Every structure is written in structure tokens, then in C-alpha cells.
Image (cartoon, rainbow, N blue to C red):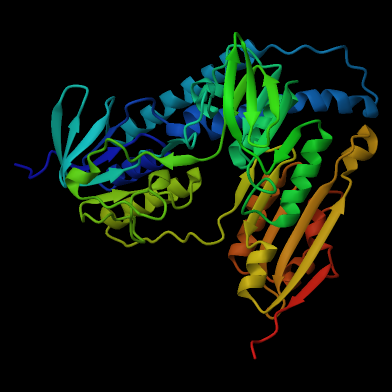
Length: 462
């Protein structure tokens, strides 16, 4: 008789949990995975995938406008928000079914229930109050939107979760936040025709990104008519029937049809039974504390993805889930390398970045060379659109190694994914220079920038 009901119990059916379950099952482990909402998790159901679909849809307005410069006469176009929502829902339902099918094909069992940890080897399924024992427990519950401190009228504010299910497109929307989600939805709503105002507490949007990227994205968004107010926060939200008044900390107010907060996400650690099992929380970020192999303070309990609040990106969660299964069930230790992770912001314009910012490089290296170009893309020369592309390379001036690449413009994410390979392989600027340009493309600028636009040398301490 087996000592445990299963070898692995996974809490959370998102991308990371699903990958871990499938790989573990492939190694012959008896696996059960519990998901209380919908298989696929935040990314598939109400995150990256529907967001990218909305971004693509919002581009068509600009595409139709740009067509005139290329000789096209396009009749006045109309947009129907309910059609977008309905078609998005169909695609998400298809993906959810595919996730479930793929897990079950791997040999793992899916249960639709919230699961709570009873002890280091036991979980309880709330749907039927059934207890399951497991040799290992993997927590992959992800994160959730965080509205921050409570303010008067907070009940009137929506998050990105609700934005995917609005009954109608708001004519005016106020969005608080200056990161990925806030700027992506600002571009989405503006693209569909909404009047958008972004509120951010800091001095500029995209905190943590390269300063040139931050300035360029803000300038381009403002060209599109998006209002960006920095150095202030939302202090109060009043509702008047179907309209809202947003009162700001600087004393001004804004009328709108919708108010959305996208100021961050917190790890979903509440009501999991972590205290009962003795699982420690990282005091610095509020996520589950784990080591380099995603093991928690309890030997039999692991955690991956956003619930650890390390690098909140879906591909990172997937890599961590795979590495966990390799290490625990594949009998070979695999440690995820969290350095040089490429990332994208699907704002409009799009951002793609990998490696160090200029400020980070200057803090770590004594000699730093910067190569930067800012140009009008070929499409804009015919369309007449007032937009520019930014490309920037950060280079170690001593070794010539490319430390970072930052791109703002169409297809920035696609280009960055490929450049990330070179950066991860420690390619030098000479390697970039030796690569023949692919013409005519915007990306050819990455291999044709010959002269540094800035050189920084840090003097040794006396």
C-alpha cells in the first residue's frame, strides 16, 4: 500500500503549475492538480493572452488611418465592443479546454476545487472536504491585483480582471498606475477610442526601466492623446449614477465613465494554510520564501511563479515549474537562472528589453559605453504618423560585452526575444558589428550603430 495518495499535489492550475504537473507525470509520478477557478491561470484567462488580443484589436484603428498614405481609401469604420468580448471569450474557453486536456493526457488528475494545506503532506479539498496526502506539495497560486491602501470610493474601482468583461467601452477612463498593466490598458482603451488619463505617483512611468525608455514611451503616448499625470495619486472616487469623479492628491478632479487601478499585484498566499504547515513568508516581498530550487522552509513543500514574488512573468513560472519537476522527479538538479530575463510591455508603442539599464550598468561596471539611436520608422514616412523608434545598447567598455538592449517601437518584443539569446550568450559589441544588416528593417540599427553616444568611466576611490 502506498504511503501517500499521490506523489505530487499541485495547488493552482496556471502555466507554472500545469508545466510542473505534466513534467512530473511524464517522469512517472502520480500527480493531482487543483484549480478553484479556471485552468490556465491569470495569464491565459485574464492576463497576457486576452490582453494581447485586446492590444492587437486596438491597433486596427491606427492601421486604418495609416492606410491612406499608401493609397488606400477606407470607408468610415465602426467598432463593436461586445463582439470583441464575445470572440475573446471563445478563444479563452478553447485555451482553457486545451490546458485541461493536455494535463489529463500527461496522466495527471485535475480537480476543480480550492485546496488548503493541512500539514506538510496533506491538503484538503474544500469542494467535498476530502483530504489528500502527498509526498510533495507544490504551491502555484500566482498573484492578484492589489488596489493599495483603502480610500473613499474604492468600491467603485475596477482592476484588469474586470476590464476584460466590461459590458461596454468607456468613453472616458482614469487609470492609476505606471507599470506594465496600466500602460497596456491605457493603449488598449485609447486605441478603441476612449479618452484616457493615466495617474502615477512617481516622477515618470515605467519605474525600473531604462530612463531613455521611460521618457520615450511617455512622449509617444502623449502624442496619441493619452494624458499622463505624474507626482500624484487618487485620493477619492465619487459615483454619480453611471459617471465617476476621481479626486487627486494635488487637489484636481477628473470626470470619467470608469476608474481602473493597476498599481501592482500581490502574491496569493492568503487562506492556503501556510501558517499551519510552517511555510515561511519572505518579509521583503510578501511571497513564499524559497531557495534556488523553489523549496520552501518545509522540505516537502515547494512554490513557483508569482506566489513567490520573485520575477512575476509567465515564462519564468513555466521554467521554475519544469525545473522543480526535473529536480524532484527527474533525479537531476536544475536551478533556474534568473539573470538576463527578457521582458516586454505591450504598451503603444511597444517595449522590449533584456539585461541591464544604463544606470544599473554604471553602478556595476567601471567603464560603460552607450549606443543609442532614435529614428522615424519607414512606415511613418508614408503614413505621416508622428512616431519614432528608440534602440539602445548598453556595453561593458572594458570587455565589449553587451550588457543590455532596450527597444521601443513596433515589434520590439519580437526583436528582443532574439537579441536576448545573444545577450545571454555574452555576445560582444564586436559580434553585433560583425553581423551583416538585414535591410530594410528597423532592427538593422542594432548592428549598424558604430559610434558610442556616451562613454562613462567611474573613477576609482581615493
